[in-house]
Length: 187
Image (cartoon, rainbow, N blue to C red; front, side):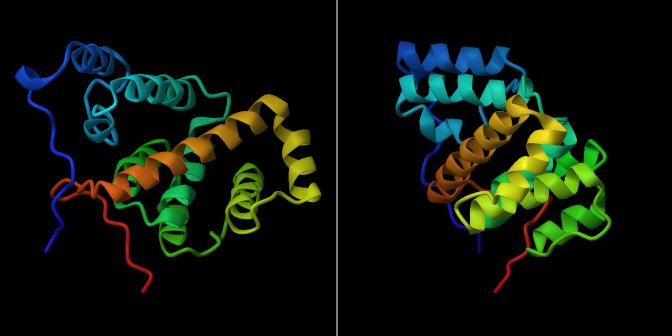
């Protein structure tokens, strides 16, 4: 049986003016909806607004190639067992051409086979960041030489932002929609 979400959507007639302003920004942004962590974050509309701004830069104005960004997000979702995040970004990753083989390997916390060199760099970088809480000099240097400093900052920001989002979504028990992409259990 699925758990109920801890935060329900706030009916429009019960929202404060500040909450309504954030909702309007969400609706007019590339997101086009109030989804993910925002139904809960609206309890603190100033925070929701700033998180939306950071998220918009990371999602829609990121110097990383989109497919690599989505691969990193999936690795974060798997690390935190973030079911909703997996559902949302698994679909995006596949739509952007990330192979089902790579998505499946990440789903089962396995190192994907047949990654191209850029995917390998991102996989190594994010894996070390999550598991070792640091990045080896070799992985950092390889990423720096291939991508440059701006992409490294965007990769770090992507990892940090989606760790935050994953924790919020897990804590508020955001359900995935019926028929959504399911993150397999590792236990």
